[in-house]
Amino acid sequence: MTAVTPQTPVKQLFIDNRWVDAAGGRTFEDVNPATGETLAQIAEASADDVDRAVRAARRAFDEGPWRKMKAMERAALLRKVGELILQRKDELIQLESMDSGKPVRESSTLDVPRSALNFIWFAEYITKVTNECVPVDGQFLHYEVRDPVGVAALITPWNFPMLLATWKIGPCLAAGNTCVLKPASVTPLTALALGDIVADAGLPEGVFNVLTGPGSTIGTALVSHPGVDLVSFTGETTTGQSIIAAAGPSLKRVSFELGGKAPNLIFKTADLDAAVAGSLRSAFFNQGEVCLATPRFLVEESIYDAFLDKFVAAARALKLGDPLDPATEMGPLVSKQHYDRVTRYVQQGREEGAHLVTGGEPPPGLDRGYFLQPTIFTDVNQEMIICREEIFGPVCTIQPVKSEDDAIRLANDTPYGLDATVWTNDLRQAHRVSAALVVGTVWVNCWFVRDLRVPFGGAKASGIGREGGKYSWEFYTEAKNICIAL
Ligand code: NAD
Image (cartoon, rainbow, N blue to C red):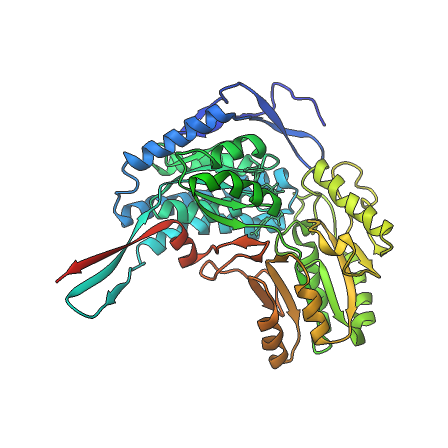
């Protein structure tokens, strides 16, 4: 790690449209995972800052103009936020890739444009959405009104820092709520950049606030704060369990997008080349640091050898390197701590007796930063830790299966249920298998095709609730029924 110099930028907390130091004056380092160099010193908030930010958001909700604004006016301000993100996209793409290690080919085509869309789309939504009016027997009229809920705590992970934050902020603010965002400590830069963007767009004071600091202290203080009404969290399943315990006593509304360990079912009916190309993305996109990644390959026996040969060759050909180079296909893992965690799993796989076909090491020539080659294990079984626990890195396991029933049984044998991929050209098989999988999303002959209208979320330990379109709208609004005697 390089020394902190007077030139190292210092990033403050964003409260009430102003930049402020943390109450205790403490800071922590934010590191570039491709080089190990310090990118910035970040303000480390304490419980006092949580209180300050929640009070600002509370005041903005209870007394400010935000929730009472006409939908068209609120929409215009949110659209402006989206437009400013697009105007500053070059700077944001660099910032996101330097902070998280994701290749610019991803941050420029997915993270930053989608972040703008998260505002523009929900701005549009609130000018179009209607409520239900229920025809009932007798001399009564029932109709529904949707009110904002209040102050939201939005807590986000490091793998798609700006995309996942804005995926919450967009609908939250569109519905008339105010919020405090707590981004992951290893990737706070684009969340902080949003502070200036929101202020420049003209959002009223206190509507959007950002706090940086450890989840274990300020995250807990935030989700248990009496001034917070709802919590939207994306992150690990175990963190979700801590949050629900902290938010439970005050009965806050929660939305949880949690971990995954998705199966990738490849049948003999598949287009083999398409399955290889698709599986390469679903295993190694964003260094495998994707909740939706599908690291558990279940391949029908008769095509197992052919698939493995092609897949291993394709994985070995992926180009690892500087995330800022447009040719780079895989960057470093997000931090030293995460690199150590992922490589511990690789070691555990070896000790459990799995066969390491390729990877497991840093690539030759990339000796700075936290790079790990695409890593493939075979000779695995369902009891092995590498087949059961979320590794969240470029590590996958490949198992042969005898039949469709076998594949479904193994696919569902996991505590997680976020998503699954199915590769088959047999239409009936596609429907049959999709119906049998206990997950929030099934991708058939594709992966990570997202649309803001469709439900997104997990079954079992992968989450509670859904985000997207009307699902987000329902979470961020309180449905009120009004009954009039005619
Ligand atoms: P994490 O749970 O460690 O941290 C997520 C956020 O929660 C961070 O901002 C962290 O500071 C905060 N936090 C930590 N402890 C807290 C506490 N006790 N109270 C409140 N907040 C706390 O997750 P991560 O390592 O940043 O991200 C990786 C995880 O996120 C993986 O499990 C991945 O599957 C999951 N994820 C899920 C989705 C999804 O949509 N289902 C999307 C992306 C990532």
